[in-house]
Image (cartoon, rainbow, N blue to C red; front, side, top):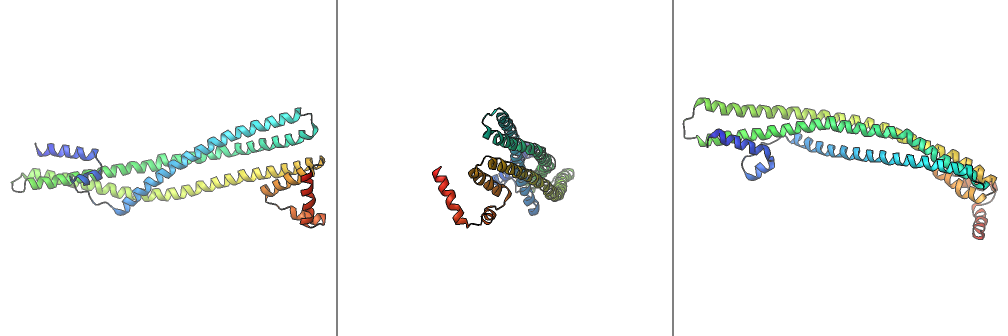
Amino acid sequence: VSGFSFKNRFVKSLHVTSRKMMEMTGRVQSTSGNTELDLKIEKLREVQQQYDDLVRLTDQYHSQMTSLHKTHKLLGAQLYGFSVKEHEGKLNQPMKVVGEAHQSVAKHIDALLPKLRSLSSTLATFRDAAIEDASQSVVKYEEARITYDAARAYATKWLQHNENHVVPEAKLKEVSSELRSARANYDRLQHDLLEKLIVLNEMRVNDLKAILNVYLESLHEFYAACASTFGRLADKYDVVAADDGDDHARLGITSEFRNVILGTTEEASDDEDDGTPAAASAAPTTTTTTTT
């Protein structure tokens, strides 16, 4: 078997197995890598997984909100339609108000959906472009590292085999040239990859910060709009309940509803307006509820 035939089989074997396997089998001693670069490569793999999860979850969130938008819209339309056909006077306005609540939420979701899609699209673009490009550079770097290991191992074995033989100078230059070429390519890719990963991390931090700021603002607008809607509808339902003389509904539903949604506290002000202590005013309410 010629030396070159052995080399070709050896290099091919190295390219289809991992560097770890090479070290385990003892066929070649792996080149000591750059510790800083190895840590950044590991970080890149973690970031790629993080972006995969973020894209998957934002797509899932968008899909769920799309379904919720449809449900709110249909439920609102149904309740509003029932309110028109309702012959029992006390149910017309409540149905209309609740139907309006669902339709309003549907409009707010409709405004949020494009921003959710933009978030998912931006994350996916960064993953598929910048992170994928860096990942391909890692593959090329690892291949260059394996190629250099193979060339170094071949040169070592060749020298050991011909230690006591006179070898042609041209052959010696050829082996040395291949080894230097493999080392130069490995060093170049190592340097380029390190710089690329540093720049990529800076881009990731800046871009993700900007994206999350926009997304947080969108969420704030959505929930603020919902809170404003429910506050307005709470006042409307408050008037309806008062017109019907249903004090229990007004106090038990509207005030509590407004407290939760708007964060207001009306119990204290109601006690002050009535001029009675909280404990005294609570007793009749309890009695009335029990009698009912």
